[in-house]
Image (cartoon, rainbow, N blue to C red; front, side, top):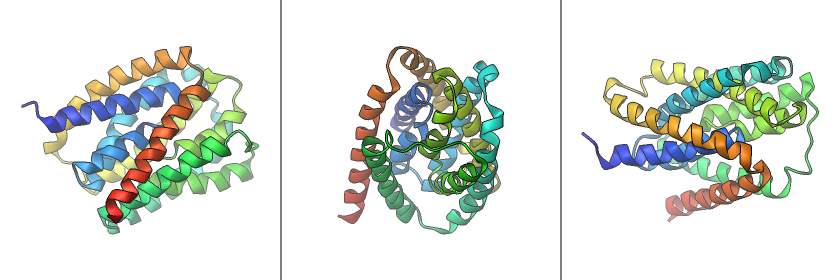
Length: 244
């Protein structure tokens, strides 16, 4: 039976997957900004990861020859390890607290990309990869969102937009898989969620294809400013609504 909940999930996933394939990241920032409004935080994270895993796998396979595994691995390994540890520990924190923390994270990411992203250039070395990997792992484990940190490390290390998109999608897929396995083991998802998953997958494919068209035609810097303004406003709204 088609319900308002399914429609809401489809619209959120459509927007998130479109942004993901256009900018290289951002899907979980959208899905985790809205899905916890209608369901438990842990379930929202599980559903988000299912959708995004399929999207990132599709793009990774599509552009597999452009993936730069050599520069990714020093960053990927610490991210995946820390992500798994933090994600398991976060199950003990209440959904309300996690959602409020998510609001603050959204505001911080929005401000950073507006004012500092063009001034910060990270050299892709094993040391910087390990340091940013720990930070990214914490963000991934708590909020299923490590894309901004990944972009900071991978963007200057890749030669063009295609290579960047392929590499960051492969990176995100591996970490999505880590969170997905933990979500299934901890039973954040159940058989009863299959209708939502099916509807979300359909919306994800549509959003991914639309985002790839946008990626080819619109400069990421212009599109990104609009997205991060939206993310920042969403973060403020989450914080204010919870505090009031």
